[in-house]
Length: 169
Image (cartoon, rainbow, N blue to C red; front, top):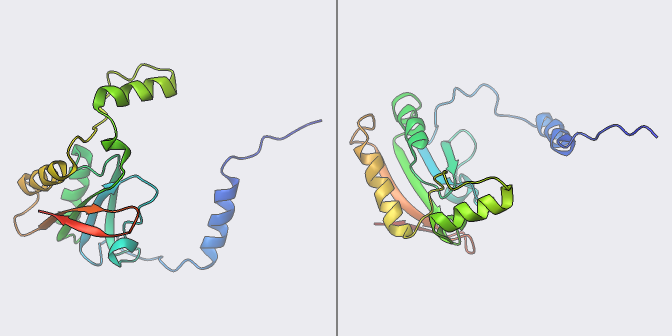
C-alpha cells in the first residue's frame, strides 16, 4: 500500500477556504481604527479584541508568554504609536497564567524535561507578582523615548473564568 502523508495543516487550510468566502477585511491600511494596542498573553483562553468590544482592524495585538512589555513588544508599540494610529496601550495579564505558576529555574527544568534539550540558558520570564509586573510594564512603556507622554497606557488583569477585566493601578 502506498500512503501519502497527510498535510498536518489541511484542516486549517480548509477552514481558511471557507473564511475567504465571507472575507470582508480587504483593503485595510493597517492603521488601528480604534487607536488601541493590546499587549497580552499567548494563552488561547484570551480573545483580546472581543474582551474590549473591538473588531478586526481596530487594534494592534501583541502576544507573548505572560503578556509582558518585552523588548520586541516595545518595538511594535513604537511603530504602532508613531506610524499606525495607536494612542492607547493596554497591558493585559490574566489569572491562572502558567508564567505565574513556577519560578524561572522550575520553568526551565520543565522545558528541559519536555524538550529533552537543556533550557537552563534561556530566559523564560516567569512572573512572581502580577500586579507589580503589570505596573512595571506600564512604567517601562511610559519611559520609552519613542512613546510620547500623550499616549495613554493602562495595566489590567483579565479573569479567564469570568471574562472580567480589572484595572491595575
